[in-house]
Image (cartoon, rainbow, N blue to C red; front, side, top):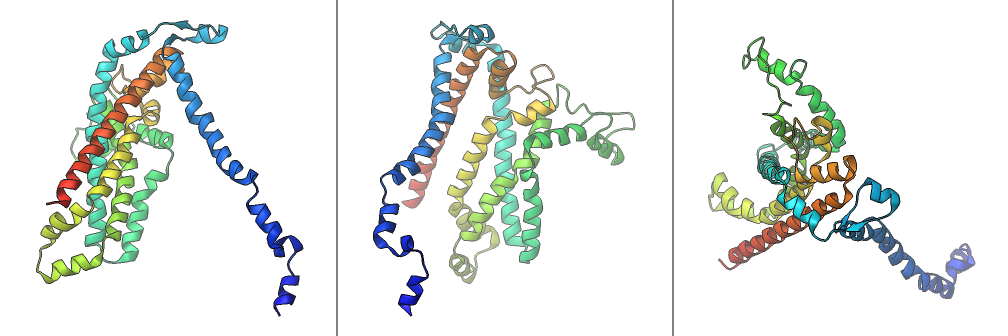
Length: 322
């Protein structure tokens, strides 16, 4: 029977020597490693080196056209660090991170725990989870267009709802995309789309927690609030921290919805550091200053994330020995 079965396979398959030679061919490992390395060099390493080179040169549209770059040393970095436009954008960035990324992680955590703890029917829980995740599946540019229409002063649905519910008079309008509320508006749009990400991460973490701990707490008569404060949240600390880091990194480079909704305006009301780098490099073709912006933004992000991870490691270590 075995001989008959083996004879049905082609010779190259049944030959152990040839199969072994095919798998252990010297070219195969190099090919498997070489292709990803080439892709990494092409889309990450080379642009980073190119950007570092031009950060120290006066690179603009004319110099790019004539391929002639004047070395200016640290002048681009000095111009960026002393620009009032940069200082103002840093303040707006911290406002956005506080009311955007932090609030997204907080709301995502709360919604995840509500879904798991309070909704016992699994089909209903999964259905609600799918609806909550749907905004995250939309392209950011589409979300920007959607909220730009919703927040229009005279034809937007938000102002009409406020009028219908009596929050505004018949002739009153809120200029959501005006200078006073523009940053809040783009933050709300981002909040609507990306709260689902920490929600998914924290929900997955809560599902993975061992049920035996909760059964023991129930036997001991622990209240729901005590279980949440003493068991659930401490065990989810690392997962919540991961959700925060992911949202921080994504929010730090927030450009797409700002570009669609306000183009950085009115004036400079919604300009964040990354958006200024985008404007310098793409609109104004001041590649040297844009590269300096990008390098400074990268260094600050790396330092902040490193400090946060060290702090988290210290807290978790202290908790382990407590």
